[in-house]
Amino acid sequence: MFAVDGFWFEVKPLSNVKADLSPLLNTLHGFGEPFSFILTSQTSAMGRTVKIFFRTPSMELQNQLAHMVRNTIGAEIILDAKPQEKVYGCSVEAEMAKHYSRPLVAEDVEGLVDRIYEAVWHVNGALEVTCQPDQTAKTWIYREMEKTMGKGVRARDIIPFTATEKSVRARVQAAKEDPYRKTLAELMMKKYRSRLFRCTVKVYAETRAEAENILKATPTHLNKLRKFKTTKNVTFPEPFRKPSRHTLRNLCSKISLLTPIAVLYLCWRIGLFSPGQLLTEGLKLTPGSANTLPLFLAFLSLIIPLALLRKRNAIVLSAEELSAIVNIPQAVDRIPLEHGETPVIKKAAKPVKIKETPIETQKLLPKTEK
Image (cartoon, rainbow, N blue to C red; front, top):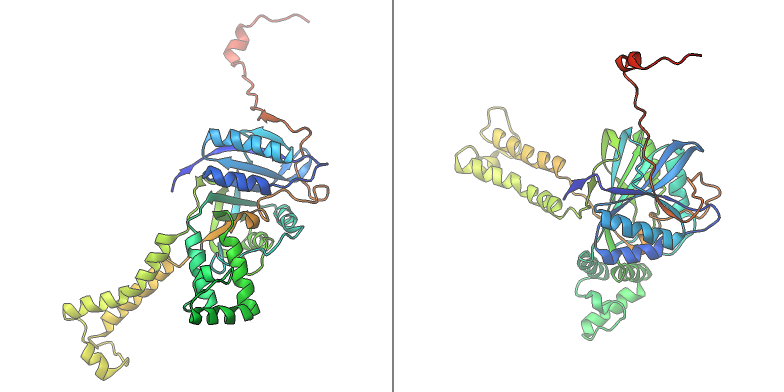
């Protein structure tokens, strides 16, 4: 994990051109570098509009991505343009409701991205999606497919149905005849064969309810994005961080379930815990009982780690799913976007500093007669 401010550029789509960033995502996957896509509702000369920004960890990727966006959608690109710094009432970090092998979208549906833009503009908030190409996630999708089809069925036997063993063929045939399991396995296989990105999704708004409204605008199918963590009084934009699949956190969360056993064993070794007395007295503990303190410590050792290391479902999206969030809206004439004029790349205008003449110097200057 690293945190830097990053290199920014703003994207201003042309008002008369319908754009699609889907081909760009497939190309970016081959770069193997992280990037962020930001939507923010800000006040400009046109009033309150939704602005689009990209952020990269290096200047080289910034220039490459800027040229790719301009060539893909024909937009006006402003290098080094950053969103206005603002303190929001809260930010909400998202997680997937179920394992990421279950897709957010099943097929292309128009208008999914438009709802996100409308929600960001309506609550005067912001959305940031940070993406990192990740093909190692295929391994866990493969295992989830096997769990879905039943014990003894291998994922490579599912689609196409090429199982050779008689017992396995019977299970595969049974799964094939189950419409739900068959459809779910096909969708998992489709995601398995796609280009995958691990992601971090954060939304910003004045209240938690408004932030959750932005999350609700994201696509849902067999899975969805839900709230994981809420932070109050957050300065936007935050430092750039690479997304994680939270493998270590979830492993520690599982290990923490064993801590009560370790605490009771330690208390037994030093003579504070008596299993025999517990069997005879049961759980009817009194303040003077010898087992009261060890059991209380075991209870605390279970609750505290679970509260601090709660399991977090990673967000891993295919390029098709990501394009339903990271994209340009279709109804560009209806959504208040910051539009560009010509498909060019230019630098952001630097603020002009006016130097004031000191009062002592003004006294020495010659006076001009009127």
